[in-house]
Length: 223
Image (cartoon, rainbow, N blue to C red):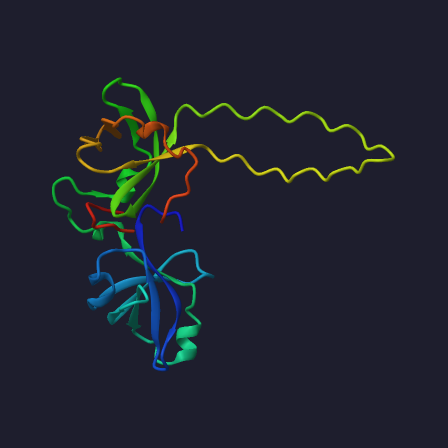
């Protein structure tokens, strides 16, 4: 659901046991979202807007990376099964307050990234990943030149066979990964919608088309 009023905190993936508990894959690093009793909002796959629902409690399941939660009114496994693929939300106003040099992921998306040493626009933040240190995925402002088209294949003869043309893969904009640490990204100006970096040698040339590892992050940020 694309709605700036809500933060998605998790997805219901399966029932847990026989008494109506639900397995939730978290999209939040804040355990209280799933463990503390209180109101949450539930959006079923067939609905366009989330509806209020009471979270009665929950617990983390070690080794599986998921939570088992109990929602009011869900008493049986069949009722829990009916909520598969539903999503849990909290209001945007419920975002936790962060400390100095901590940022919500949603606030970083679409920020322009500049090279502080040259003033050059490098690109725009399109995603944020957690992999030891947080990483900004930045879509490059200057995209590399496309590869030249391959020469036309000659028509088949009596002694040759026509090869099937290769399936065309959609072009994906080139990106780079920039470590989101103070030494490399010393300036984050949310008001001006910009980040300034001091890239070490070679950083801007690395893995332009990498596929990184994959709201809320509390490792210095939150979505």
